[in-house]
Length: 295
DNA sequence: GGTAGACCTGGACGC
DNA sequence: GCGTCCAGGTCTACC
Image (cartoon, chains in turn blue, orange, purple):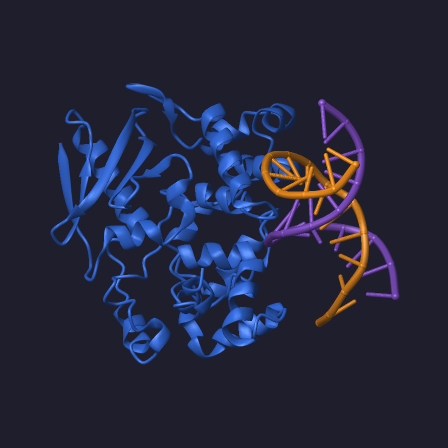
């Protein structure tokens, strides 16, 4: 069956899918034109289902098994709403972006939403797995976690869910390391999973907390393996844009945009977007980079 | 407060 | 096929 869910306008599923490399990380998968997003998801009932999301008039359609009960359907809708940011209102950002040539097209393209996982646990783990490695390494590590620890889709056991905190926590460090090759990141991922499983860390509450961004950032920085870059990245996914995720890629983009390709420092990246205030993260994310236009 | 070096893996490269 | 080098963000020790 198909659920149709409305989105706060403007909305473009393909723009959302392209917003983040997450679309290429299991258990997400997108078609070659980025028009269709699929995800293998475990529901609270224990059922493992495939969610197939496609553009619909005014929102998105979600293909799900026809025999889901009301509770399962509510859960699917709740998760899809969060993943796709369907209720996000970015009109205030568009109002300031209209006056900047390098952002002038974001509203017309319905850019601004960023694809996220149903749980912050998954986004934190994936973010840790993006650090100090190549993108190919991130894909490999996430794939290993999913294939080794996730639950299989009954109709196609080769496709699996992202493991829950308790599934990760139940591993010992040796097994986790030998099966997933996360390297020095293994203890960080294990510690995070155990803290969430035991309730010591109420990670998911950060999705909805009213705490100021500085406090949310401080709580993210307490997680082993999460530094300034990762925290800023995660804040953007939480809809808080006042910090810059400065990595080597950001330095390269800023270097070619304003410094003739000369090496730049983190503070130069920060300075370049300072004027965007609470929107700086979004302005950086969707900036029309000269470097990308030339490659 | 700033910075150098270790951490780990896989890929690129030279031989 | 083997060895070496490199990229990547975080953390710790040190100044």
